[in-house]
Length: 138
Image 1 (cartoon, rainbow, N blue to C red):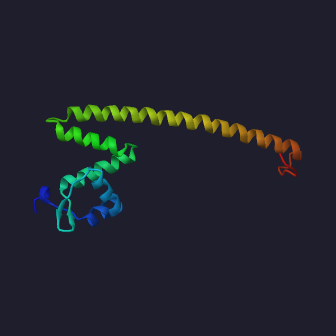
Image 2 (image 1 turned 90 degrees about the vertical axis):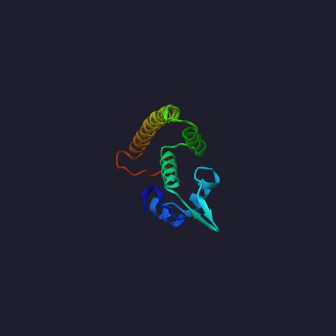
Image 3 (image 1 turned 135 degrees about the vertical axis):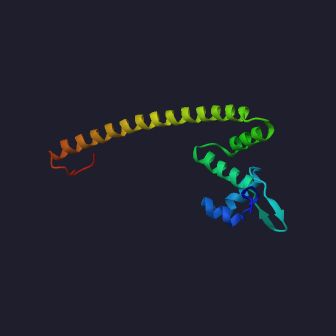
């Protein structure tokens, strides 16, 4: 069978990407994928599979479903991928800046925790005379 015409069931995709069928149906409800319907059955195309893969990758790097949908819409509307790539770069830059800020915030909090721990250890040592076990409250 031509690889471009290969189809997938919801169960096959759920197994392949280690997600629930409910998750896939949610992405369908959000307009991110659009399987063909044959009666009660959903038939997913290679395009749907690729969009599911991109959606899961986008979620992993912290994109919202709205941001992912906007990228798909840009891709669908563009005759070339330049507008989509520029928008994706903008989103990636924003995501990177946010992650870098979170890293700095974690560093600050870690230093505060270390300082508090040292203060507590010093108070315990002072109260126990260096034996390491506190006999009263701090």
